[in-house]
Image (cartoon, rainbow, N blue to C red; front, side, top):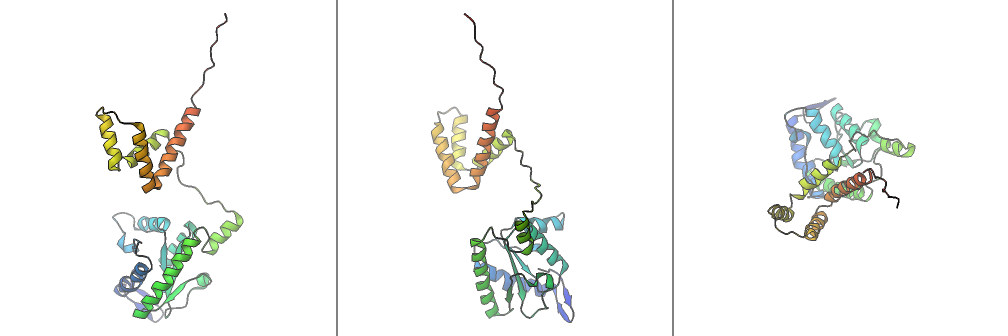
Length: 243
């Protein structure tokens, strides 16, 4: 949403008015819809450095982005376009009494709200329904860009470095594992020369992965890389002697 003073024809809204709308209406409605979410507006996550990088990082990685398109703010529309190109999980909202919504996004599903106490309750209910829809349709495109990409089989550029060495995987696995007090205790005991059963270590690793599913992918990368390394070991021909 805009974070500075806005003017649209005869309509003028100040930075403090927008902040109040966010704190007392939008943020409150999102919290009522799903209290488990960590909610942040762009100006709350800025750190020293590039403002654009901080905002875009959130746009790329947040599970859900709520975009208030009430005012024709170029930054908001640019960031909405970036989000639509990145991933699904975008909720568009607008003040029912605000300016007319631009033609380019008029066709997109959006939620209209009123900046009143009853409007807060209605907005929370509408956002909750939208969240439930997104959860059930997490792989379904929520904008025309992604619909066309899916239809035409467009391949998005891959910028990640998928080449992970066995040493990298081992380090990543160890770093995650030592965050578990139980596993750290076993490692310390083993380093002191105590007799630690490997099955006990394996059991604790399984428990850890059960509570932290994301660790399973680290574990898998390590063992796949280890297996690949073993396959790549040059094999020598067996020497036989003639009798």
